[in-house]
Image 1 (cartoon, helix red, strand yellow):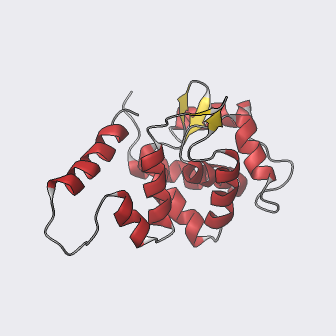
Image 2 (tube, helix red, strand yellow; image 1 turned 135 degrees about the vertical axis):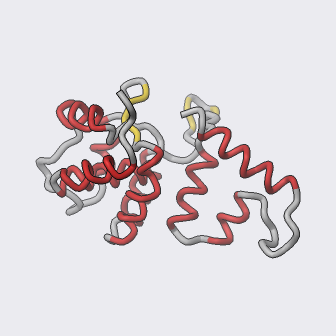
Length: 172
C-alpha cells in the first residue's frame, strides 16, 4: 500500500475532532518520538489546551497510525516528517506554540541527562533548527547552520552542515 500523499494527510487531519488535532500539533512541536505518559504529562502542564478528559491512549494511537498521522518508533509516537512544519506552524498561528514548546522542553529536554551522563541524540540539531525556525529566531537558525554572514559567499562548511542535517533526517 502506497504512503498517503501530503494532501491526503491534511485531509485526514482536518477530519479529526479539535482535541485530536491539538494532540497532533503537540506531537509536531515535541518533534521527537514520545510515549503516551510523557505526552499526557506535557498536556497536563498546559491548562486549558484540551479538555481534561482527553488523553493520549492506545485508542488514539491505533486510530492515528493506520491513517498515517503518526509514526511509531518502538511504541513511541512521532509526527510524520511531511506534517512536522505545517502542524507546528498551525500551532504558532493558533497561539499554542510557546506553551507547547516550554512544556515539551521541560519534560523532553534537548539533551537529557541520564544516569550522570548525557545521551547523544542525533535529532537534537534538527529539533533546535525546527524550534528556531518556528520562533522566527533567524540569528539562532543561521548559527545552528554555521552561517555567520548570510550575505557572504557560501563556503563548504555551511553546505556540509545542511547536508548533515538532511542526511540525518533520511534515517527516519
